[in-house]
Image 1 (tube, rainbow over the protein chains, first blue to last red):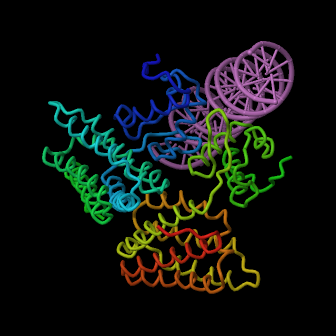
Image 2 (cartoon, chains in turn yellow, brown, purple, green):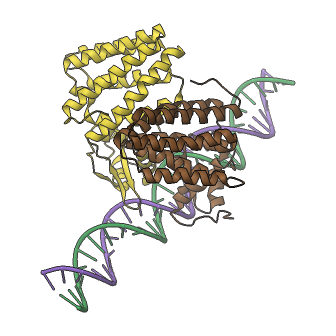
Image 3 (tube, chains in turn cyan, red, purple, orange):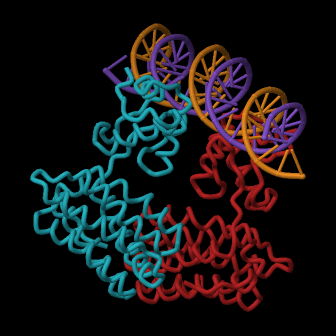
Length: 224
Length: 224
DNA sequence: CCATACCCAATTGTATGCAATCTGTGAGAC
DNA sequence: GTCTCACAGATTGCATACAATTGGGTATGG
């Protein structure tokens, strides 16, 4: 019954964590659904112990809700959560991007390469949105890492996962997609120039444009 | 051997978590020290299972470092960590305070009461610094809760624990302490006035003053 | 017919036993 | 003398058995 023949590499707890997380983000587990330790353990093919560990990790990340002596259920998000998250991101990411420009720690070649690969994926006839999403996540993570503040990376990471449930890029109009990809290149340029205010501004535009694209699709609510 | 006769309330995992956390923040467990599951379990009087759960929780919060198949050791922090944390706080807390002023959600009576009780604790002959710390934490938490962004509360909470290791308030000069207490009252006034920019400014001053007080004591490093 | 108390099934929480992995030590070869 | 390899001890990771708690269903009394 181990229908997850993906990567047997890694320990049981890691497999459980990755499997459940992927199922939640892919929509295979819908919001509000109860995750019984026994069921999940049987489905993955491990015992309850590593499953419990994985569920607690996911609870710490806010992907599931843990109610003592009751169990764990998949968090169900709404438009309010999207606003909370993008409100935070539009505060933290521009700031971190400005710090990265000032620090000069950014690996500009790597960032440029990621931006380029996103262009290529977007040009395919059915664009591979999952691939773009992954490249995009790595791009943003690397920018924040270049800020020199490791905790900033962790804080933003702990918050960016949720919107993935909504298939972020699939709601982009062709124009919004082109603009988003262009932003990445402009961010690299601003970082190369060491211009903190430029970098901060572009990143702010980038995040708020993404926010607007998602808000339009998912019954809008006012920005913060 | 259960030298922890504290609160039998709650389940074993919760007791383990609270006990270990308190020991770390009180300095009873010094940085770099290995926390063997067996030893900790025996010391608290529970089995390894709830201890493992507590240690994973603490690892998620960044209080301990977990190395696979090796174990868990108490994180040892330095001046760089203090800068990272206060750099983040001086970005997030003023912003959240401004949101709180605009939202009007703040419980002004409760906040005023907390500020007043901090004054009283500070007036005792040996001021109860632990009590002040706790009141201060609740004050800041309530301000952020009034921002309306629940994730903001979580993010800041996940970061504020570390400086407690340094006995934050014990390094305040009498003048710095008076100023800090006055800031709290001014924040309440700014929130009452609904003046977001005022509230944001006071909170920024408040956090950065705290940063400076701590930096002076713990071998200074340049602000971000 | 409704309220209440009790009992039972399901599920989580905890303890313990066993397997896997890592570190340090010491013998042996070069 | 030093480097290598193998083994032993210790510790974590996983599995399983048991205890505790919750929620619902049912019977009972008003």
